[in-house]
Image (cartoon, rainbow, N blue to C red; front, side, top):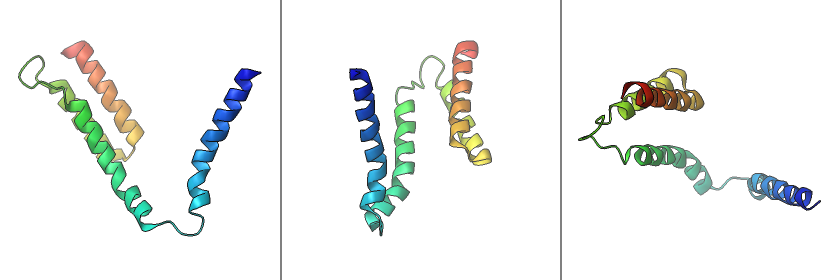
Length: 103
């Protein structure tokens, strides 16, 4: 019973957080929210790229070759297919294949 109540409360809070912007901004979305919606996705992707490549040591080991090949794969697939999920999954698969088999 306790587990069911916890799940119900978590579901309610999740739904409330998802619906809250539509309730609050019912009539007109403020300009700063539109601005943040435009600039945050590229900024977040840039931060993720920096975070993923921050520990790559170009002077030792594989010299960052698997990381650069995987990153190039992601960029090429994104430019070609415009599908973020496909690009990220393929880049991860290429990286893991290179690290496990080639480097």
